[in-house]
Amino acid sequence: MNPANWLLRTAKLTPNAAALFLGTECVASYHVFAARAAAIAGALQARGIGKGDRVGILMKNRPEYLETLYGIWWAGACAVPINAKLHGKEAAFILENSGTRLLFASSENAAELAPVAPDCLEMTLCAGTPEFAALYDADPMAAPADVDRDDMIWLFYTSGTTGRPKGVMITAQNMAAMVAGYLDGIGSHSAKDATIYAAPMSHGAGIYNFMFVMAGGRHVCPASGGFDPAEIFDLARHFGHVSMFAAPTMVRRMIDVAKATGDTGEGLDTVIYAGGPMYFADIVEAVEVLGDRFAQIYGQGECPMAITVLPKEMVSDRTHPRWKDRLNSVGYEQSVSQVRIVDGDGCPVSAGTVGEIVVRGPAVMKGYWQNPDSTAGTLRDGWLWTGDMGSMDADGFVTMHDRSKDMIISGGSNIYPREVEEVLLTHPDVAEAAIVGRPHPEWGEEVVACIVAEAGRQIDPTALDRLCTDNIARFKRPKKYVFLPDLPKNNYGKVVKTDLREMVKR
Image 1 (cartoon, rainbow, N blue to C red):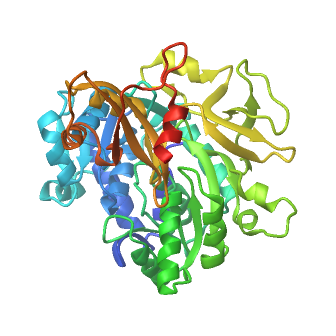
Image 2 (image 1 turned 180 degrees about the vertical axis):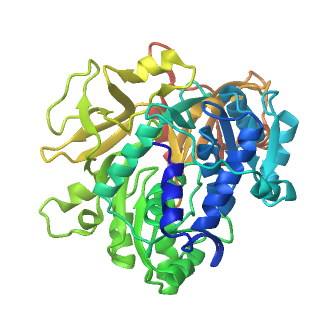
Image 3 (image 1 turned 45 degrees about the vertical axis):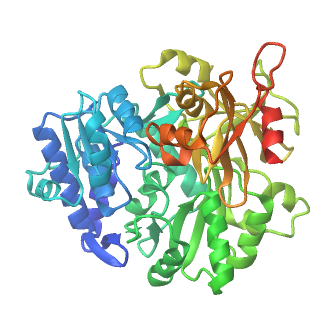
């Protein structure tokens, strides 16, 4: 069940096949890819790191990301992927909470982390440095370590309403189930296929590497290190048979660039959109402009990419009498998952009735790392309570209606109001703070801060900006500050955020 065995198998079958690319330049065949992973594993083993140990990756998208990821698994250890966009203090919390001993990082992330690095972190190795390159010369582990199906191999931190990230324990079985769900719902790949990593590899884009490793496909990191639609279109034309993961906001930008340049998406095979709500008009236009290339996946960190699926043929279909309803949905349950809509007591509701989406199956997480209370609240009688509200029609298609939590999704990234509010409340002149999202044409939602100042005080918004920039990632920083005499509250003293959302729309 060790994913590194998939890499080893492919390296034996097709050792000379091109594997890792930076832009259009091949930097490793599958033989070299596997050899580097084995050497990295040997270096970890020499430091006493093995089964059960956590090893962090705080790295921007680059070929070394996959080398270190498979090196960690080859050694039998657990990868702790950290979004490279996070603030150093946020990354430090994840490292400390997980007890990470060794970190692979990008140089700029390592520099920001250094002043606040936790004591448990023994070493940081930066990609692109001589110290990192020296890992390739370490004595390799001859074969991947034995990993059992219930062993944790991926510790993914997802923020909760408490404002502190929770570590989601993903096992080897969870990952294998995710792969099976993908192959059934999206389709298989072959050596002629390529995947482009334009979204963060610490999230969905990264765990979608498995299907291409198994098939001996090509892994392409854009030379820019990020997402540039024009670069994506160029790479797709160059490689052909390209698949990629994209947040809905990325799809919107691809549409805009294609319309402006006349690009047709030549070379793109499948664009899987997930990570946030896709506007109906946007996906209709995406198909009109770029063709039959889009599929939808609904999942979350606790059940990675494995809850529902809306395959390409259904996204593109305009002949079914209810095609609009289906396109407004997140699809039907994946083959590896059972999905229900339930009321507060966990009882299934009738078709079309809104309730909470729950899921069970082999892709559902083992639990939250060292957090039994949150685990018990989220995993109940074998079901994962997603916190998302939705309905299911008589044909089994699930439509999202709202989020039971107040999470904001901006540019495909999750932003939890509580953690932003807690930062703002450290300002001595802030009496109350409430964070809400409001619609944004490009990012889906943007963050708005509703602030009540202490009596007689005036607050400079630039000071609040600095406070946020010093403590949280920039993408979580409010884009607008609204100063109010008080916040709307119900009879129990709870802030009525629905009123605030309506107010900030105006």
